[in-house]
Length: 224
Image (cartoon, rainbow, N blue to C red; front, side, top):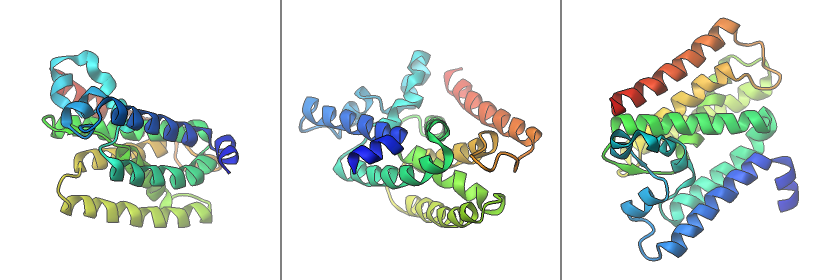
């Protein structure tokens, strides 16, 4: 099963491998305090003030996607990545799935940096929310009945998890909302297989510009 999974879903397999390698390295190298804010930061977690003081640390918009805080955090996110990956990498194609995953995570971390610069945060949920939102966006637009039905279920997951995050202390809601925004925009300018014509060229261009303006605007606000 592992060999089949690896061959059919190489991006999902790679994401899970990197995520677990980082997590296990944290457990070994920071035994006993791997969940501390300092450890999360040292292994690539998001901390807006660090980017504010040193713009060369903009790589932190990407690395928090692969860093997790404790066993429950990584197990829940790994299950989500595993099942989402099998469904969406097969639907989108590996390259586009990778782009959705990264672009969603980057936007989620950027909004976290912008709104909560004093908080150290990490986790794949920024990207996961983007994947939810990308399918939810297609609920009323896609031509395929299968994708529309899938979009309906993902819309339910998106709404449930956003509400859960709002009522549960300690969850990075800014990152979740940012990830959802990133995914919703990305699905417009990166058309998925079989649905290339559902958005006009003008709409794809506007969505790309909106993504870049939001991202660059938040970075510039924090740096300058």
